[in-house]
View (cartoon, rainbow, N blue to C red):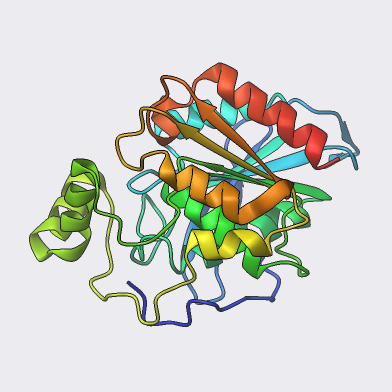
Length: 285
């Protein structure tokens, strides 16, 4: 879905636009970040419930950077709910991927979205957070895996990775829901449904080159801690996807197969999100 280099690793410092950065409530800031390929990404910072020193986070305060699923955005109720639980464990950055919500550009369905996540991680570090945890759902899960593999030693690196309901491989059409999604992405009439029905603007170009798949990315993440979470009632990706990811990751990854859980943010209950917060605080310390 992209005409750019799929393995591109951006290294410039991303700063919020001072003309658009603004307070958006107590302990909250909102701005548009500019990615390395010039896309404006709508981003929200929630200070969280941790202790701050002189207006900046203490060295022990992690920040969770949340990467939503396809057709989501930073203002969706399920994203706000995820952020609300994770705020108990640290600050939270939420953002809308390109082509979603108020962000610019068009969705490449997981390819150049790595640049969006990198911009958000750099912003979080620029706000004073020394520990960053990326948490991705569905498409966002594939993005956090590829981002961690591509950004190992730069200012967009992450200290722990959580992938929830992520695919292991591209072009999967083995479930009815995935066949509908492929129709929406690949057909002109489907992209119209995406734009007007789901507020998601989808790029018409096919991937060229095809980006590294999640299962190819996972072995490159070590020794960064990795948590793979998947529901046994996921209607998009069956359990062979998380098992494939865990097998590729080896001993450095934890795999949670959640009984009765469906797909992504809407299916992630408060108890699961709290356990993810506990895991992250322990593993990235």
